[in-house]
Length: 223
Image 1 (cartoon, one colour):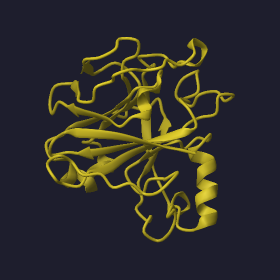
Image 2 (cartoon, rainbow, N blue to C red; image 1 turned 60 degrees about the horizontal axis):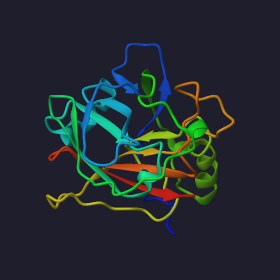
Image 3 (tube, rainbow, N blue to C red; image 1 turned 90 degrees about the vertical axis):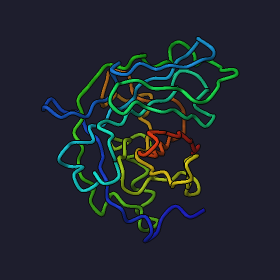
C-alpha cells in the first residue's frame, strides 16, 4: 500500500472551532435533503464550506459557480459503509440523494450522534509540512491527530489514506477532487465541535467532488 511519499505534498487545511465570524460551519440544518428509502436513519450535514472565503481564493478556479460545499453522510447506521453519492444545489440549499439504501443496521442508541448536529463555526487553519505524510514516520505521527486527535478534519490538500490511494471519476468523465477527509475522535474524548465526540467507527470518510456537476461521492476506508 502506498500511503506516504513525495506525491502527498499538497497543502490544505485542518478545521478548528471558532467564535469568530467565519462562514464555514460544522453541523447545523441549513440544507434540505431529498431522498427515498428507509426512514430509520437519514443523512447528516457534517460540514458546510464557504467557497468564497479568502483562504480559498487560490482554488476558486476549481469551484465554478458553486458558493458553498455541503459535506453529508449517514452517521447513525451502517449505511456509510456503502459508497454514497449526492448532488447539491448551486444557489439553493438542497441536496438530492442519488444512492439507494436497501437496508441499514442502526447504531445502538447510546452511540448515536445528534441529527442534526449542533451548528458550530469553523476556522480553516493552513497545513504546514508537518501535516503531510511525506515519510513513514510522518504518516504514523499524523495518524494520531487524524484518528483520535484534534485534526480529524482535513480539507483539500493531500488526504490521509488508511489504505491505498483512491481516484474517483465523475459520470461526466472528469476527475473528482478529494475535498474532505474525515477521521474520528475517540469515544472517551470530549468532542472538539460538540459535547459528544465525532465517532462512527474505526474508519475514515473521503468526500470527492465534481464542481461542474455539483456531485459528491463518499467512500470509506477502515483502519
